[in-house]
Length: 332
Ligand code: UT7
Image (tube, rainbow, N blue to C red; front, side, top):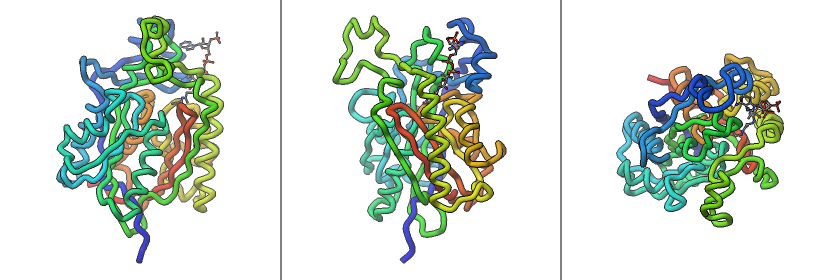
């Protein structure tokens, strides 16, 4: 019997309409377009402006899109995994809200917290359910409403993050396509370099925690940068070596969009040219778990069945890793 692999059979994304440009940020904090562009590659990001709209909206719209594209009835979906650090509520899981709103009444679901590596952790997890043979339709969502935890007075973080995300459908395939291999790592020594300190069980919300801005993202950018550059590049190279993938055989690098300089270091290490690197950071900024599905959505039309993709990410935790997958379909 041939091996079952989890193939991505549809992808869709969602972005709010509002564009927060570098020019508008110049009016909010002491910064400028030149600094932001040269240090990060970002020109604008999307922001959810409506009150009472959370991350689930991004997931719901993305899931509706993939159900329609793949001709799937909502009740056929077995599992929804939602990678996010900005769940609608501390509990229950945002995956449950997405299932309810999309009519996926037979699906079970859970959230995955791995910050910017959330989508690749979720993809590997979803692939395992498919490979078990017991689940036929698994949806992996990567979505974040980062504007809900960003301090728009802190120029070290507010210029980086945006709202958005996407989702993929995973289905079993016995063809030579789908998720081939993955390597993941985490290291809790990185916790305090990139985190939201309060609001969990250790430091529940108090007047003091709000006054001290502890419900916002804190990032020690320089330290995170150092670890991100090394680990994203190392793990992208590792997955290539492990699978005998030469630079010529890699069709696309799909890198988490944290900073163009980190992506350049990764593609240099892999020995691949810019023409094989998916990028959209200039338009959306860093959407945390949302960046990789948004890239797949943006580049879907350029992807061909059998293309070799290397996905790589690094994020808070620290968390990081890489996935090797073969694209499963030609775009119509
Ligand atoms: O996605 C999850 C993982 N996250 C990442 O991978 C992010 C990794 N880190 C980074 O991408 C970069 O560290 C940043 C883009 C966040 C910052 O770039 P940097 O080159 O590391 O800048 P820096 O923090 O060392 O700051 C350099 C200077 C400082 O001024 P002095 O001390 O040299 O006078 C900052 O105060 O730039 C200043 N600065 C700014 N200036 C204008 C910091 N933020 C800004 C700003 N506008 N927004």
